[in-house]
Length: 284
Image (cartoon, rainbow, N blue to C red; front, side, top):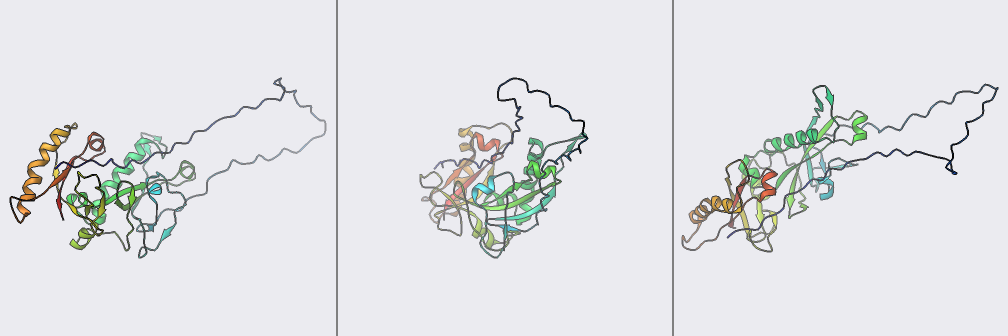
């Protein structure tokens, strides 16, 4: 059974452009030079340009009730914290300082190099934050998201980045949770609650990913690593998944002649985004 593929989350980058406007007289002719007066006048004090207010450094372990659109935004805009023992969708697990000085040059906070470094750090640190192995994290619905200051806030001195953990649901949804997510996958109860399950077989039209605490009929149970390098193609992905996923299903079946199994492997876009593995799925 070959499952359909779910497109990866894409985090959109927001770029700001500045325009310079030139003025002219209503007639289009050059304006006459102003006449001078013999009476001395006081020099007006120039008005300083507006500056952004300094942004407070985020707090580690703070919780937020964010929407999906707020989560995929690259900057944190007026996000208010909530008590972690109440329903929330996001929790900060790391706050760090942006390193944007490269070979003596200060890079903009929205540059690809800065953003890629923040993304890599947050992704790499998530496993330890939730108390999981690499495979346990891949078999869960927990994912890392990250935020940096705006350009204006960075100019005002903000130099932090923020890593949050969220529980995904469906193709573009977030699951509400209560309580801290730190070390939540360290025990079996947490892995059972926030494991990755499906509303149908992974190749079915009605398939949607949900946390295993919700109604479901299938569960992601194992991960098969693929050879690194260029994308091998869908056929090679299917060939690599078939034997280990089928063998796992057979070993767990009550009747070795009657069992179901499925898998989902990366397409080319998912491969470029870092998913170089296959998930094996079984009815649950």
